[in-house]
Image 1 (cartoon, helix red, strand yellow):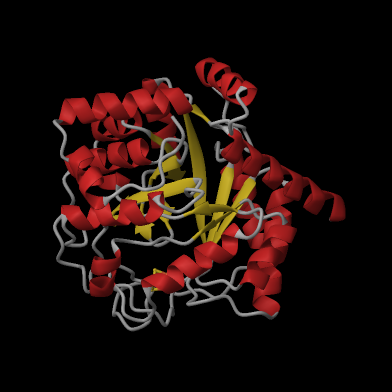
Image 2 (cartoon, rainbow, N blue to C red; image 1 turned 90 degrees about the horizontal axis):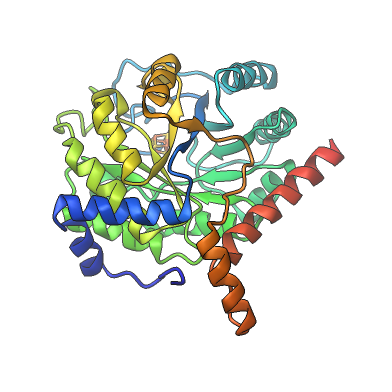
Length: 363
Ligand code: SF4
């Protein structure tokens, strides 16, 4: 079946509320058809500029207006970033994601430094991702030229609930940035947070917004809110693990080819809970004892968990293998003059690899 891009909230809610075992079985089956179930990507998230953000995201200790214990930092140097990336690579990460607490990217010295960081990590043969706030088309193009692999810009929640959490920029601003990234070879990473007080319909609404993008994002992080004292969402209750598993499974079903990232909130999850998330289709985690500013399991604990579950960290730029059944189906489609099911993501990855190689040759 070709990817579906017209999911409705009702259809997604129906999936989310299936009997748990049925939901898990369906998600795990789809996961196996599109991904190697024993491979999980390990990414390292690096806060290259911390705190002092003018935005008012209700969950974020980096917003300057909230009184938290967070210690801010100016933009790191290229050498500092390179040293951290080398450490991440040595401990099994294949991707470095650099986050800066900015409302939007401003042209000038700081952006030039970020471009240099992208080139530097690219030369280490690691995938490099950035999350820097809103981007113009030209800035997205410059990041692509520097060899950026992915750009993260989360939708956070449904369009309706988003307004309850953030007032300083709109949902459409987010979609516009995603649109600007889409015009380049850079892959799109966009997801959200559960546990902010949203309803199940809001969770489904967020998945509608993501899955109806065409193409769908190559990567969708699912975060569980980590309430931080001093932020408006400090008093929120921890999200039940069942909700996380259901959310991961539903995301896998509506976006079969996407890399689903089990992101913030893992310190509150048992290994059994995380294993269920992997079974339900999560195939990426963030490693390192901090996720930008909130706690995260230590990388050695994660590697122990991988060993216990027989999971292997994904290599950088590893192309998703096309299952034989899909290959056979595709050759049948092609002989009938139809578009093959796997053509879009493979093509996207090829273009991205080409851009990486071009950036390396230039450097
Ligand atoms: S989530 Fe990003 S944009 Fe929002 S306050 Fe935090 S750093 Fe700023």
